[in-house]
Image 1: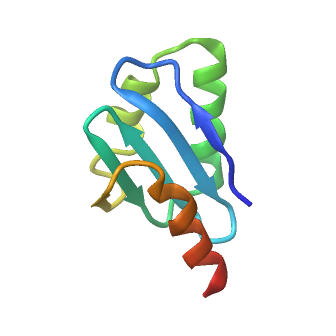
Image 2: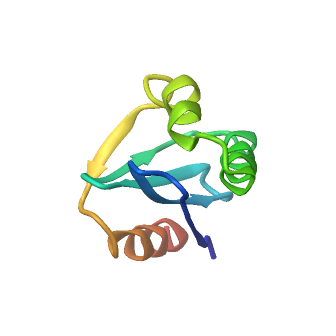
Length: 89
């Protein structure tokens, strides 16, 4: 089951990735967005940047926003329900 990674960012609270569906959910201070068809390498780089204390926001702006289609969803705890839906079917 996907786990949520807390983010060291002033604009991004956390992110969560489902490797089976390549679905990335990013929770911002203003709400959550689902990004579909995101390669696992993008998620791995998000983790690396976050752990290194680098700017997750800059990576998001350059490599995710506008590259992958976004769907706005309600804020957490929506993550868990969304991944349960994806896993079921």
